[in-house]
Length: 279
Image (tube, rainbow, N blue to C red):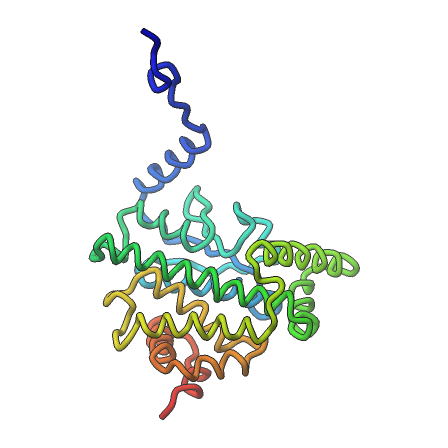
């Protein structure tokens, strides 16, 4: 009698998956070091809206977990990252990038913000995190790289600031082309500016409805709170289309109060938020 496929074919496991699993499990056995470094572009001269939002989200998450870290600016932080995206952390021998990867790395050390959530709540949380990535982050990329006014006045100067001429122009052109290619894949390339702002407003409405009158989205702080804070705070404080985003956020006072609450937790400047909050 011939063997079935499941009997005759061995199960092949990718060496990369084995290596990643080993790395995570090995990292979980070690205590959190006191010298963890969070790498990002230079905040004053270089960092752009999406990267600033994501860096703030990671910082908020680490603070919510009561984990020590030090922000280290690097001109080539994006090139140093294992995924080509910032921020990333160096924790002992491990280098981990982006919020989701860092959350998983921290969780594997037995530290989690979602232990009190049931499976349905965890699924909802992931859905809202996808909303932030798919709308707010895409809108930030669109504004920085597609809006000519924002690109010429801010993006090209900041992104190219760390490179000498003519390399700065080459780097800007290369990055802009790559972002535009992704925006086409995501069906954001052909959107008008008004449509982008409407997408942001719709996302804020969904987030405000979910937050309702609670302090945090699921009662206690989770990585969703860190992610939402990072993006909303950046939209409130950025100089790129600042008034447009502020006018949208003024409509959602619960979200502004929520951001103000996390600002105080992180010892961030709240003046910009206080100006938007109705008295």
